[in-house]
Length: 149
Image 1 (cartoon, one colour):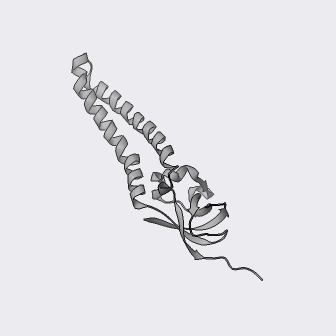
Image 2 (spheres, helix red, strand yellow):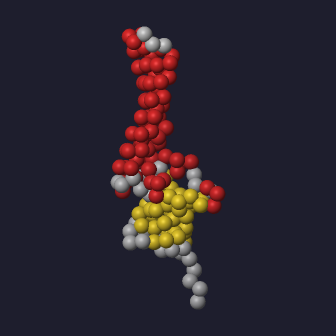
Image 3 (cartoon, rainbow, N blue to C red):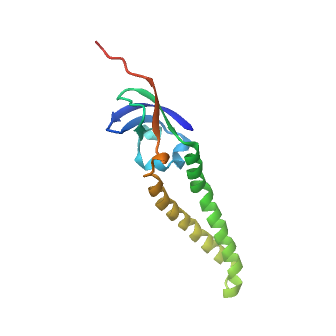
């Protein structure tokens, strides 16, 4: 499980908004659309399922399943490259049939495939973001704020 520490800034019925530091794991996260980036991009607020019953001001730990993170990372980083390479190979192989420049057709189909990959990723990520296993969760409360008498 990928884990991050943060502070709860807002609580709703079943979720908590958590202020945390932005990391490289954020780039591959399917829930990144539910995050608000603040303070020059170094901090962000993420909406997480509040399993631990955290309250505003609590220092907590949020986590996301490693399998979900790996699937999303593959989809975001590897899938477009594979599609681009397959498109380039296809362009190279069919160009002679149409009496076209193999390099030009290879580049055109490769770039087209790369664009299609990101279109597919966008559609798929919107579906995955609705699934709870791809959303961060508040798993533990580290420290509760002190109540002033």
